[in-house]
View 1 (cartoon, rainbow, N blue to C red):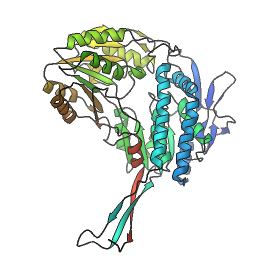
View 2: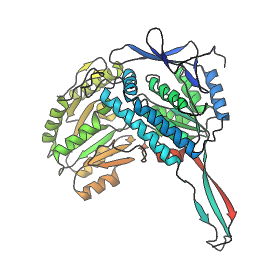
View 3: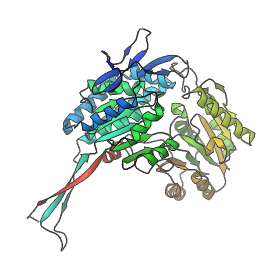
View 4: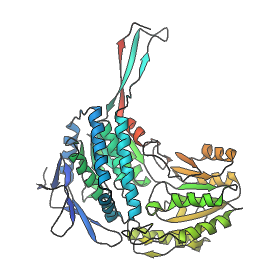
Length: 493
């Protein structure tokens, strides 16, 4: 390493100004370089923390050293470590929630929920670490066979490069790290520079709970482009696991070369509210699927397709509910929603909403901005080519598109570059079956928000929403391993 490095004596400590600091987590230690990446709360705009910045020479050494590290934890040891981390996090929900709110501006209701989801990921990974994932195949089943049996075992890939976004800064991290621990892989993690604090907190906690040094290293660099490129193209990386925007995902796919890729990208989820839908139920599903996490979820409802026969009643009830959402100071425990990630993001959202209104949309609620706060907003009479839905508007906007036939609804829902998730509210099975079959998405939920899933179930999209590979604990563990076969003599039928 060419940088002048130091070692922090404490596990992420507050400096003389009361600001929490984390060193780059390298080989079980927190390393400082004198260069810092500062983190500001989007609501107060105050400095809330900072993490050490490393250069690409240091990162090159980290990647090479991590690649050389071989992990041989038993299944039970992996199970124990993962559950111990979950135990510790469950004791610290308030601390973790506060830290995520500090860096994201999300309200405490949302960040407490995220902390609970993290425990699920860890415990599901621990459970699956104990599973026997081998198979046995008899060979005496054809005239070309022999009295042998072929066995399979799963082998860890090696070094995983994990790159995570800002919107679920601990849960997105743990979705990559926990399955890697469960399968004995090593990981170098680069969290979002906007929200790195909870990632470093988790990495240090994992070490404190017995994770071997160099099994997980956590880094960031001020030169974001150079750091990200090295995390993509470095020859010692076996797999790149990226969650983020579709544009960046395509760049990674073009540069990664002969590496395994898991790309979980953007979305434009459509909720189809059919003519037989219970309007109150449809409104409940919409509320659950749109505004949580300030609507900064790749699976959030971005387009609400409502049959014209019930659209007026649905729109009025939705607007009434949305107007009652309490939003503002994310530290106020009574608030239902905080900010989006930056004021710039809120300004762009405001511009798209205004553009839709100029082009015929009707605003029924919201459309107010103060800094990074954007009021929960309902737009009616949206067209699918309005920019607010044609692009991924990553915030609390509920756009209603009216349709007359199911054919038209399915055509509108599929008229997008994205294909992550979707939903339908109906009790008419033939129509439900058509939506499940014909929606070009990785997930379709019936009478439920498109975002609904459990942390271990398969999850992923098609088209610009990803490569079609699935995440969720079970699929991630498969993705982090390859199947090795071997055969043995077997004389007994």
